[in-house]
Image 1: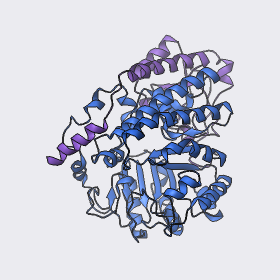
Image 2: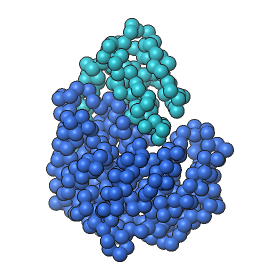
Image 3: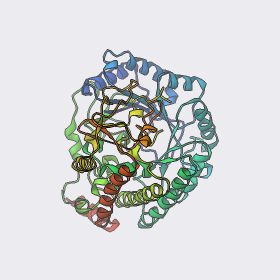
Image 4: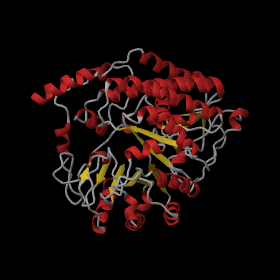
Length: 371
Length: 132
């Protein structure tokens, strides 16, 4: 079960593509307690609980996060569930105290950064327009020194896509090994962009192969995830998007959304809101965001690689097509490219270096590469 | 490393995640690969578990022996293995190559039948749906 807690909707950055509307709202401890009650009562016995602190910038509310973690750890059923907690930050707020707390409570650290300064400062600026790259780079260096692992997530836009190879090389130069690359599906991707994404992923594949040859493997999400899925023969039901079933996001005032990417302004009258934390869920609201004709995306039904494709990602579909269940053309192009490049990389590396990807087989698709 | 994300180091050791369990079963049978005992990774989540001897086979191949899992690191067992019927089966290098070839051939066949969601079609559909 995946739960995302928006401790605040405030942020000190003003990123061009952010899908969260900023509001001067912070979660109260009472709401946090209700969220935690929801989490423990809605998670089947023994199933893993994943809790992510999100925002806005969650570390603006670091003191509050400490209190929420204490609530989680002191919940009566705490020891009955495997639990993973993480924080997703923009990397502008970090210090020794935060690192110490994250380590003490085994909280994962995922940092959003789009790449080298010329990329980062174009899309991720402070409210006054100043670039964030130098501060975020310092955080990456500091966090890499103080934490056992730093995951970095870069948002890909039509402008930054051609620079993806430089972005990955930049992260690598900072000592980062786990790189997550996520297209902004709400961006105005064109046919030309779709035509280019294959060659961009090919270049990423070359960097990936070189990193293995050098004995310092990089883990790049579009490739590692697809290698795992190729070995497994496709996504299984439990790995696909389960928004509103096994995935919930909570706004500061306790409104519930089926996915953190759909929170928008976070208001109770949002078309994606499926209830409040102290009320029964209104899952029927989700049907309003489904495409009205089943035959939409008939190509997917007969596509050979449909089992290997993330055509099931409700938020990505919504952002690119307006419906949870209708695939956009760029997602289709990006998925085909990543599957083809992953296959090529797999064959090439195993031919050259012998068995390499056995741990991918049973690993978690998005995180299987962590070693 | 093991102080953080304790469950990640176990990966997702569930054969139920595998779609092609029949192929895996056939593969294990054909290659006469025996399960290891004393492995129940789900139950041992968060604990140190040692892998013991194979359930009904001689001592493992030295290649396997050298790669027995080190649970102090993440990412699952650093050894080719399959989960099937709740048991773990260790593979040697040749067996892994044979298994991965099956899965690679499967996707290669499927890639030949790839379809495409076109940009033009999405625009047409948007227009139709918008008029409903």
